[in-house]
Image (cartoon, rainbow, N blue to C red; front, side, top):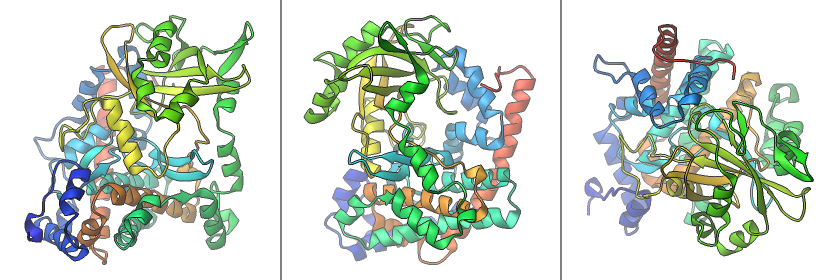
Length: 485
């Protein structure tokens, strides 16, 4: 079989099976052949055409499947700045990317690879690692879509930080070159070494301390790590609960957090008894998605309260709950997040997910691409009070989770951060796709880097235009927005 016609089935796993009988040289040849079919320069530009799908219309379309009372909060958050708009506009961007040529080299994409969807968290072995931390949109598609979204987010964020043009361009180039360099390393690794690869935050701190003066590593230091390690269920319970009749109960803070036993906004409350039956019953879908030892661990806890909670920017309006569980006593809390899962924005424009259950898509996509995953990660169905059946995935609400405040970083630390995000994307793609073919496609020179820079600058300009369109739609009364929530 020649490299030009090597199989490219619908999922990365199936495609790997097709490549299994091919040598590294043949896989590299396939990547170079893809480069001839879609030159890297073909990825370098974006310009809105007259028939471009209206991005505000796409956001309105998404809103139809969300809780109406919360949609104004989403628009209010997106209206805050171009980067805030970018965070919530994964669907419009995928719509735009689908109009461009693509490499045809498929991986399990993050699907929403912007700067705020990376961070630190604790592994089951109690190590603090850095990785992608949002998988709501994960699905299969061309590898460069993640890189293009990440690079564009760097350009938008850098401008918003007040960086000059040269600094912004260097940050984007650092992102693209880091992805390319890391993918080259993965192309030379053994299969197990690729799978075991992870980014230990303590190791990172030693490296950044070695390479940067402490004053230039602002925001990435031991005090920040100490703060991340304190962000667990005990701390979350201290901040979000109160004692009632000897048991902890969630504090109500409408509209951002509403207890399930209260009515705060129409259509956002849920029934505690029903949720307990669905999650802790022996026939529970969720329990069956856990391995036997983790099922045993989950059964050590009992659910005592539930609340609706608004999170993020892009997720506002989806049904999201937090569960309060206790183990041996009231001083042994565990808080789980139950988050609605819908079809990925990628599925309309790329490959249909092989998973019928959207929650399973999120969980399997996360396990496939992330170095280590949450002990309680699983999926289930639920029946919200407005009727029907909804799909959800479940994870710990906080488990040493922490993010980097990119806006506060000095330029050298910001560059370190964007390079680290690019590493995480490269690692995810190497685990789920063909790292040899991808490395051959991006090449060893800077052609890919320059293409990503050109695209990122174009799309940063487009984001400013789209953000202005959102503001205009709010001002015209087309959509309602609630700012500052």
